[in-house]
Structure formats: C-alpha cells, structure tokens
Image (cartoon, rainbow, N blue to C red; front, side, top):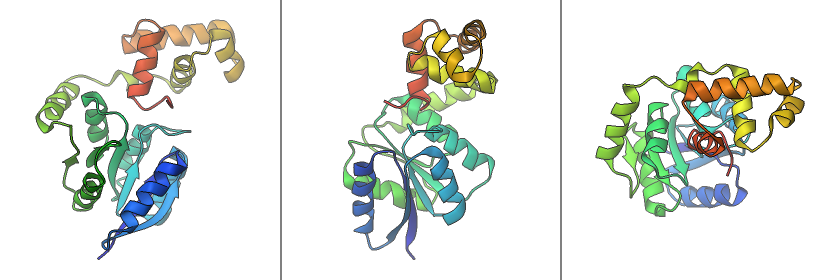
Length: 214
C-alpha cells in the first residue's frame, strides 16, 4: 500500500526536489504541495495524507503552529519536519508539538526516505547528526518548565514577530493600527513574560520557534 505524502515548504526548489525524490520510491505517492502554513493546514484537512513533510519556517503561520493545530484537532497525519535547524531545542520543540520524525536539510536522501517510512508507521526517526539521548534530555527539560510563549496574548504574538523583524515601535503601531506607546507596552510585556532582554535575544527566540522566516 502506497504512503500518501504532502510537502509543505515555501521554497519551490525544495518542494520539487523532495517530490522528485519521494515519487521515485514505489511505496510513496505525493498528493500535494503547500507553500505556507495556512495552505498546509487546509491541504492536510482536505487530502488527509498519511505523512506531511513540513518546514518549520513558513509564511503566515509557523511549522510549529501547524503542528500544534494538527495535534489539537487529533488529525491522524504523521509529520516529518524537514528543517535547516539542527539545534536540540528546535528538534525537541517539534517533537513536543507532535512531529514523529525530524530530518535536517543537509541529511542524505536516504535519511529523508527513511524518515517518511518511519513516520508512516508512527515510529520516531532522527536524521544524523541528531542524538536521541540529547534530544530526550532536552525534552525532559522542556516538560519540567512551562512554555512562556503560551502565556502571550494574540496581540503580543503579533508584536513579537514584527519586533523580531526589526520594526520600531512606531512602525509596529502603524502596521497594527495602534499607538506607538501601546506597541511599546506590548513589547515590554512580552519580553518580560519570555524572560528576554534586547533585540538579539528576541530575534533568536522568534527564529527558534519558527516564527521568523530566514
């Protein structure tokens, strides 16, 4: 029986490459592609593929947000994250939000194929150079600490993304239709809740959470 696969990545070259690779396997069928997070969700709900190959950094909503919504909706589709990020926190976050497999983009073609096959069987797979032991340790650490991002209001999350992009408070206010002072207040509140200080830490946090496109 063929495994149906949906590919979600905002780069056309990546999608075409992954499609060509997977369609070369006799047990896999690519049923669709998505170029952003919202389209990925829509396609999954419409096509109900066995496996979703998902980038973490996507326009509209991040890969982590896609994972969370699929988890909350109890969708049976298994997710393979395909990302440039090999950091343990990125991997642990993805697994915590429901991914079954994690493959870095410089991994071999055979590892991606293996990751899709494992995901279809609901078996965890981590490509090289990821370490199962270190990821488990990171997961244990995340499980013992509350997710501060979940405490942010929807407006604070909007301000977070815009601030991480380097926008000033007046720019953020103009974009969101609020005053510069209100934007400043939201920025201060979200930094306090996240325990961050300064622009660099804010940007790094947004990248790690898949909120900011590189």
